[in-house]
Picture 1 (cartoon, rainbow, N blue to C red):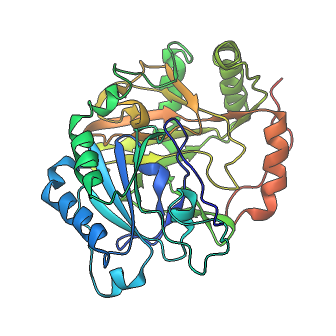
Picture 2: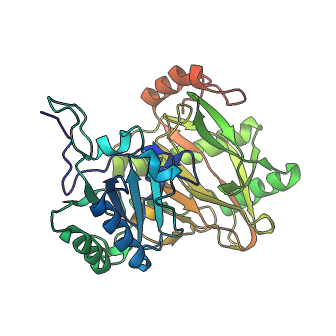
Length: 377
């Protein structure tokens, strides 16, 4: 007998990457922060599937990418070639899951085939909360009552930031007074003296971690500090004023610090950083906590926020830090006035350092290798 994965309410939703018409590598977990409705309809040539997709379009005001998004999952290549379905952005998109990877992960196709010549697809709807945990799994029903049931449910859902029934906060630390104001001015002046270089981001391509520049995703300029006395000073302050709080709250002992950069988000460049996680490649998998220390406050925009936990924006005071797990989805809003200067290190421990060293072989050209001697005193 064919075996299917069984998901139910409260389970974490499987993360995946799959192709859409607009994106050859849509990273699904970056869609967190709103309700997600996945419709595993198998093929749009099926009458029930067609009725479900038509009903979504009739009520597509429910799907605005703010409160909710709809993703149809097709396993039939003819749906694409014959243009049976199409994205309607914002809110409605389709995954071309012709290898069945996504459908298998969500129990819509069997992971093991049994005696049946062709095990049938288990057509279904899967509704996810903004943190990508399963709220409900609703199979296609013989009477097609599932269609109205799902769409009525989406209409009744509260705002994403109150999905458990009340407003939630991001699981982060906000720490004032990490750097003294004069030290912030010193670091800002250092950036202004030397200027910054275009800052890309890491992506895994063909098994290698490589740097990518895409202004649609990120616009920022960075200066790497090479003065050892300044590096040691930043390490000492983070070790004294940030590491103890991480130990208290998360029971994690920081022993390593990576990256000594002063960054600038400039309103003149509409600088920003779209939603991302900081540990999703081989070259970044060792990162445990990110620290974002503001060096000035005479700017608008440039706030850090965490889509999985609502719309609240965080702008720490001069010398203050936002500290968070590198696995949290986060973004920096566009700077609309002035320049935001910040110091942005990553923290980890000795066990993660071993992982970092082991992954050296998977780093692309130009991506910095692990170096010994970074252990905190």
